[in-house]
Length: 418
Ligand code: UD1
Image (cartoon, rainbow, N blue to C red; front, side):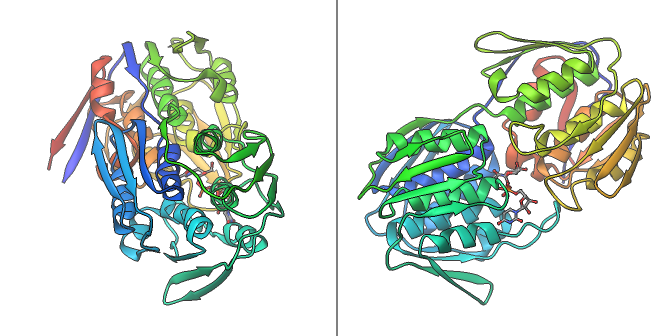
């Protein structure tokens, strides 16, 4: 069993290259299903979720070649229409093939995703939105059977700006007849990236990045070459690392405009952060100040940043209250692990009260999801003795070279067997 061993590290210094965004590349890979022929994605992160999406596309008959930084995907004229349990169970984001399959073939059979460590994650909004476009669903033996004789554009008002529902709707609407208007759409940079790629494929989309997206359906789309947007959540991880360990870092490729609210929070904690044009430069104060944090849909502070902010607050001066508004339940699971490192955190409902302490205490802790795992590594930079993070496979799902990137800027981090 692999582990990441972290020892106290101070004064990180140097440059970290930021990879393409996990939460974008998976959807862009699914979007290639919309057009037969060879699409090429650049700035593809080396993460295991990309491997799972590649397997899923192969299961549908696509020929996928992954080389460092690039995914070449050749989509056939006729695709397999099933997303099997074995793959959806390993990666919930697989549900995002539903929209493109319905859009192009009018049929799909997708395993229903179960719950996960982040709590219940229903897909009712995906289904009711697609139903508005004319799809019908039946659920049998754990699979959703989807059919649509014809998809017709219409107005879809999302009850909540769900990222996944917006993506599935977009990818169905681009090949539907007539105009679809998605109201209360998600505005995340990854949605914008998807819209950009779809537009390059020949889709007609107005309002990407706003809460009203209008799509005029077209007859067919063409394959595309596209570069994945930089990962703002990965960038946030390194901002937290320098915040916790001290020092100064340049994050090459990070986009300040995608992380404005987070940057404001980190400045309020005492960090100096500037936009270098081609990235971010960040310097940490001797001691971070506590702040309160509320997670919200974009452009608010992302729920995915929260574990890093909690790790930072654990070693800040004062008390910070963190309120989770996006996911019910489970998104505080990693806090028990941080407590094992002597962090002073109390949770009540969807709030966490974090009382800062000067140093944490290294312990054996378990990563239960991608971001929580990375946050434990970050916390270990300020923990006496040794922190051993297990559950490394969760971190690998979403991080391209976390350990080498941290080690290259002076962190005492290694990956070991056993
Ligand atoms: C995506 C991101 C995830 C991020 C989240 C919120 C990917 C692969 N994952 O997840 O990292 O934390 O956005 O920014 O891109 N909901 C429903 N019904 C639905 C859909 C969602 O109730 O049909 C609820 C969810 O349970 C959750 C909230 O809405 O409480 C947000 O979900 P959503 O925005 O859809 O997140 P994901 O696309 O699953």
